[in-house]
Image 1 (cartoon, each protein chain N blue to C red):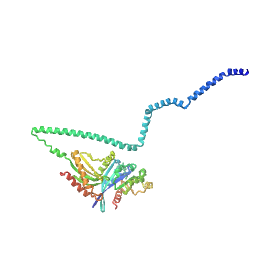
Image 2 (cartoon, rainbow over the protein chains, first blue to last red; image 1 turned 180 degrees about the vertical axis):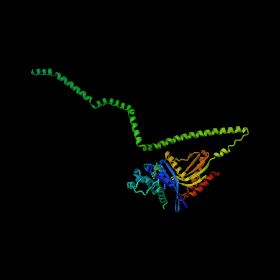
Image 3 (cartoon, rainbow over the protein chains, first blue to last red; image 1 turned 135 degrees about the vertical axis):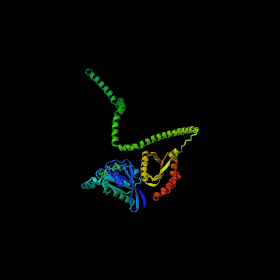
Image 4 (cartoon, each protein chain N blue to C red; image 1 turned 45 degrees about the horizontal axis):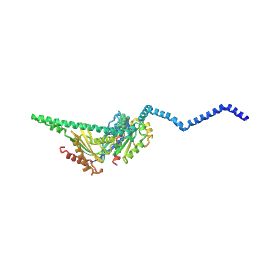
Length: 164
Length: 273
Ligand SMILES: Nc1nc2c(ncn2[C@@H]2O[C@H](COP(=O)(O)OP(=O)(O)OP(=O)(O)O)[C@@H](O)[C@H]2O)c(=O)[nH]1
Ligand SMILES: [Mg+2]
């Protein structure tokens, strides 16, 4: 089968769960303690599509309050972006629009996915209220802890990156 | 007659008045003179100058502390801006320092090597007197540089295009990504236009990096790598880029094809592999 490599970059504020989502996706594990990422951590997982093997090289980068603070070289050559925010911290999704504008200008035509993480920490009520506060609609509500929707975001992004 | 008397009387009675009047007139004249702008500035100047001198001499004492506080607050409030501003300057300073230290180190090593070599030859000759042959063969073989891994990587994304491995123990996809992150970090930090990182030492391994436009080629080498070997290898990697990479279009580069070429090229460089 044909095999290709794709660079995926996880971005978003610090502590929103980028490392946890990657760890859940790659190793099926979760840890409660918080070890902030320094610089960038690279992981890899092979995603099998019906007719194509996709080698995902995942760049889990250190969170920043604003995406403009992330070294540009980390974004270079990215094939897909996952923008992660924390559903329990509105400050982490207040600036989605500005951040996305910045990313789109750096990486025109590169697919991206929004993931509102830590869904397990909110009740139905709270979730409804939080969703109503989103500045733009968000497709995926995830939990690195329970694994909810984690596989899905990577799968969806892979399809978008390979135009399937 | 009457007139005369009157005049005399007048002068007697008014003498004092007249005197007072002339005196007053004089004083008015003097005062007028004194409050003229020229005079005022003449008088004020020394006073003002003295004050200015006083302020000047106290300035550093006065404002030193105030400035210090202001700067501290400024730094506290705008840490990131200040780091942004200082970063390039510091980077250059650090780079200069490192460069100087490296040169010193290189000199020391060269001197040491010279010393050791001459010591070795003395020892060899001395032992030779007793018919003892020194066998350095083993040692030399253990220290001989050997290419463990080779990689061709996209400058931008850090994705692997092709690879060579002698052991196959490393995940080259991840190494390629990490190397690219480190490389761009170092190159950003030193902000040297056109400057490229060409070697990283990791434990006993040397990571030798040859940059071309869209790609860079890496050889991970074990053993004793000296400048000579490094330059030779860099030139050879350069040749690889020239021979193969410049012809390949990004679109139809297949990992397999590049890997085959790299394998051949590396074995050509070191036939013992
Ligand atoms: N309950 C819950 N906790 C989570 C979830 N995801 C992450 N966490 C916790 O949130 C904290 C931060 O997670 P990380 O994955 O390290 O966050 P990060 O985005 O990588 O942070 P930086 O590397 O600093 O940018 C950790 O204590 C995690 O255990 C989740 O889905 N649910
Ligand atoms: Mg992290």
